Image (cartoon, rainbow, N blue to C red; front, side, top):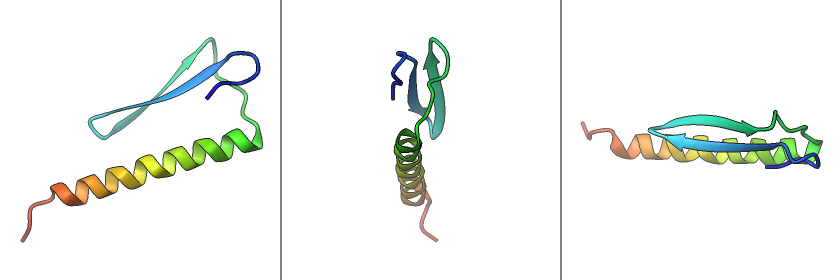
Length: 59
């Protein structure tokens, strides 16, 4: 996501870890961009939980 001043926030995933990367300082969030970010984080977490449950060995 990017704010009006060009500050950018990127979410990078690797090995079930989430890294938040910013350029030129952290962006300012509006209520809508905060909701969008929350939605992205929820989707990522849901995918990680689903992937983890598929990798667990059967009893």
